[in-house]
Image 1 (cartoon, rainbow, N blue to C red):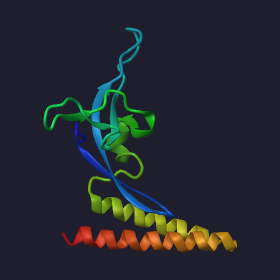
Image 2: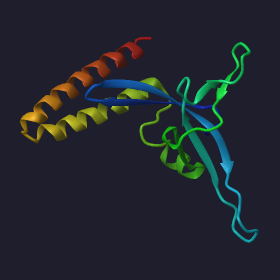
Image 3: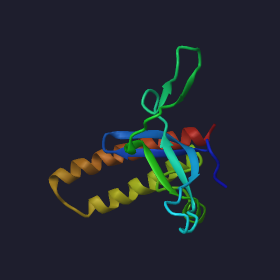
Length: 148
């Protein structure tokens, strides 16, 4: 069952490298009905990308007074109904552990490399070489996380 402040992880990867992102369940809400005769709407889960200084900010001058920013841009939010979330799992790429996130990203990167290797463009060869370098760095990071 998904609860508020649950932590999810996602590995963002490209030919330049990879980055581990932390996402949190910020709220679980039921959208209000516009008219009293409408059926009750299902619960919606809101995931927010936690980034220091952008979505996770210092609230006041007190020590350790951090919290969510009041206005978070759509780039850093994802929402889905609780029914979809329990049936299909969290949104694409979000995993409950760092290790699962790396396994998912490695599988996606390997698939992309196989698809790109079918094309024989000279520009594409350099792109595949960069993707393979990213893949090896993700695999080494995965093995470091697994050994902890």
